[in-house]
Image (cartoon, rainbow, N blue to C red):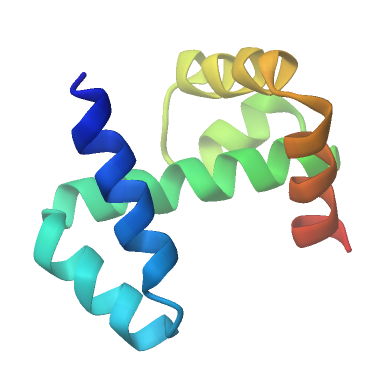
Length: 93
C-alpha cells in the first residue's frame, strides 16, 4: 500500500468537515461494491461491540459468512485502547 496515498486520503477525509462533502467524496472515490462492503463492516463491528447477538446471528443478519464475522472479531482484539474507547462511545455512547 502506498503510504503517501493512504495518508493523503486520510488528510482529504479529515479536511472534508461537512457530511455532504464527505459523502460526495466517497461517491467519487468508491464503487458501489466498496461502499456496500464498508457498510457491512460498519454494521459487523457495531454489532460485535454491542455484544447482544452471537456471531452466527450477526452473520445471518448481514448475509455474510461466519468467517467474516470472526475476522472482524479478531481485528477488534488488535485495536488500540484509544480506538476501542472511541468506537464504544460512538456506537454505544
